[in-house]
Image (tube, rainbow, N blue to C red; front, side, top):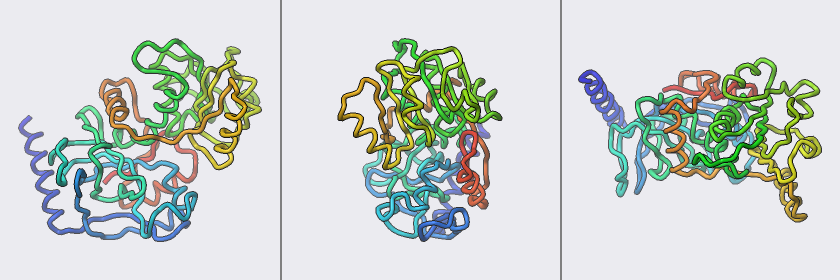
Amino acid sequence: MLLTFLASKVSICTSFATMASKTMRAVWYDSYGGGAAGLKHVEVPIPSPKKGKILLKVEAAALNPIDWKIQKGISRPFWPPKFPFIPVTDVAGEVVEVGPGANRFKPGDKVVSMVSYMKGGGLAEYAVAGEALTVTRPPEVSPAEGAGLPFAALAALQALKITGINFDGTSKSSNVLITAASGGVGHYAVQLAKLANSHVTATCGARNVELVKSLGADEVLDYKTPEGASLKSPSGKKYDSVVHCTIGISWSIFEPNLNAKAKVVEITPTSWTIIRSALRKLTFPKKQFLTMFVSPKKEDMEFLVELVKEGKLKTLVDSKHPFSKAEEAWAKLMDGHATGKVIIEM
């Protein structure tokens, strides 16, 4: 206990000593495109937390596909709002300073946070976060486990909720299909669906079939086989809900496998899928195709962190990379075959 206390004090003192130098290491890109080669290691001023904000010493940051897609120009010219841009939103770390009016946390608190979508800033030694999207990280949750949660686990949780599944113990058993179930969002969706008393059919590559079964999936399809490509449940079940975590599957493939009032939730919407969803709504169909965007909510983040603490949910870590080799992590994610989360450690 004494050693833990002293280590905590040393960490805080070291953080303040570094802050006194007023600069930090960060990774940014200064134009669209370039991929991993477009990332630059730089020394920049440590940001100051404004009203209602807190400053974190980042211990781990998790990458999401949206990070490299923004760099590629998916939201050009609106996002990033300006260059150079420090990417990444999902972090775990330690509070080192609080801004005016911020009273939920104090220096030394361990937290999980989602920093501003628009401003970014997570791929650095220090990052400013809002109190509203920051939650306490208990000792049972490692920095890597915590950093993996904000975007991916929130997407999985909210997609399941959209289909009508709840997590208060009253959910009736339903049949759920989860595509790309070994990915960043999919591996959380499998575990959460099982916690909600669902029968889970999942798709993934052949090398991950046993892994996805170990996460709780009742049936696993290799997406490269004819059976997997058709999405048909091996037990002949029709799906009440689909959490669709990949691209390239048409409605004509989903439709014959769905129950009469099924909902398919697309978590990687493109301009075409958004249009398709809107057009289907005009006909008031019983089988619904829905697109979603993650809506960061503190209560959802607290729920997820508590599940990890209790051992009911785990973050599957594909790989960990030192901050000095952030570009390797970026390239790994862009490759598109990460199993779980890609983590950068400071």
